[in-house]
Image 1 (spheres, rainbow, N blue to C red):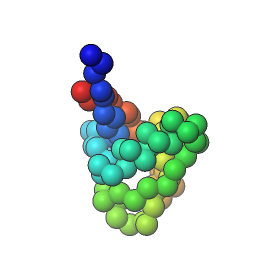
Image 2: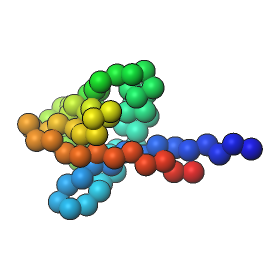
Image 3: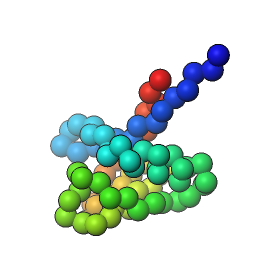
Image 4: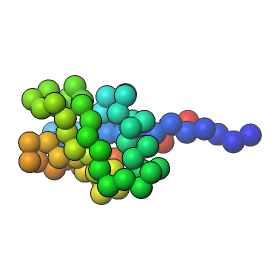
Length: 76
């Protein structure tokens, strides 16, 4: 039997990895599957703006002109 994995996306801030809101994990996966360069998301960790731009292939998101590293982990 094959094991199904679920992707979780995290960003790096203040020396720690923090998961993005759950509804954004699927959107970022879909962007990768479709070969997209970026997608815009809303996330409770970034309340000062309506959307942040995420570049899943380049492993970063942009918030108020600052780049934050992102990482994708697979959970069984």
